[in-house]
Structure formats: C-alpha cells, structure tokens
Amino acid sequence: MDRRQRKTREAIFSAFTRLIEKRPYHQITVQDIIDEADIGRATFYAHFETKEYLLKDLCDELFGHIVNTALGLPHGHEHYAGCRADESVFLHLLRHLQENDRNILALLSSQNNEIFLAYFKTDLKKLIRTQFADTGALKNSDLPTDYLVNHVSSSFVETVVWWLSHGMKEEPAVLAGYFETVMKTVI
Image (cartoon, rainbow, N blue to C red; front, side):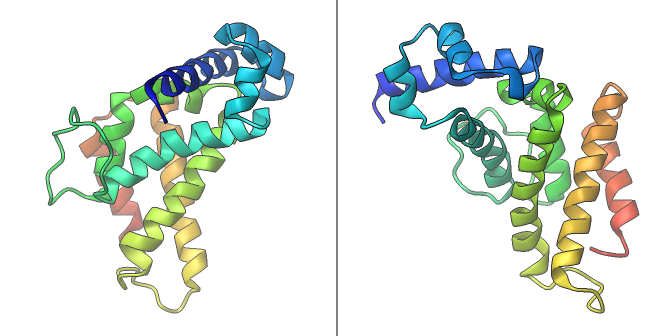
C-alpha cells in the first residue's frame, strides 16, 4: 500500500472511530463515514466493501497489533520499550492497552463496546492458544482445551472491562497480578 492509500485508509479509520464513539454502530451509514472522512464514495469502496469490512479491518488492526506484540512478532513501532522478557503476556497486554494507542480505550468503553470486546476476545483466544494451550501450560487437562482457552480469554476481557469501569486506577502490574492470582488453577 502506498503512502497516499495508507493516509486515506487512516482517515477512514479515524472518521469511523469518531462516529462510533458518539453513536450506535447500527445507526452509522457508509455515507456518514464518507462525510466524516471527507472522501468520495468510490474512495471508500476502493478500500472497504462494506461498513462491516471496515469494522473487521479496524479491529484486526487494533487488536491484532496488540496481540502480535504480545507474541513478540514485528509490530512496526518502537515506542513500547517497557516490556521485559520475564513479564507475563497479560501484563504486556495491559501496558499496551494503557498506552491507549489509536484511542482503543474509548472504543472499549463506548456504547458499542460489545462489538469491540468480541473482536478483542477472538484475538485473545489465538494468543492464549499459542502461549498456553499449544505449549502445554494449561494445568487442568481434565477439561477441554477449547473450554479453558475460552475461559481465560473471557476472564481477561472482563478484567479489562472492570479496569476501565474503575477508571484504570490500578497499575497494569497490579491488575495483572489480580488476574494471574485468579487464574492460578488454570495457567
């Protein structure tokens, strides 16, 4: 993707994010996004087939980015230097969320948060499977792996929701400690 295309795509993401922070997702039209981004209809459709594809791509970019950094994959930014190799993946994720890259916290706190939390949970499941299930780190072998992966990812999402609803008063290390204490029987 060339620079001009990236800038247009970013303008669409930004416009969509601004709209979704203010209104329910189902009330936002492609025309609303086009108007907010100040682009033409053909330009929008050159990048996204529908509003649903835009939502999916935005979530893939936001949550895929966070999960990929937790997996140690290249992520294209160097500002996140605070992570040590001995930190838990959960602490890493919380610190990344605390950075509020691309205003992700507003999306997770918006009236449309169920949509974003569902995408976040989906990406978390991939991470939990890779970091814990596939490595044999899930302790309870009497339960189905899919159940445990779902349980850990759902619990982490709810931990983030609780953290946001309490104004993020706890430092990421404290919250990661809470989560890991509760999860000790599983991981």
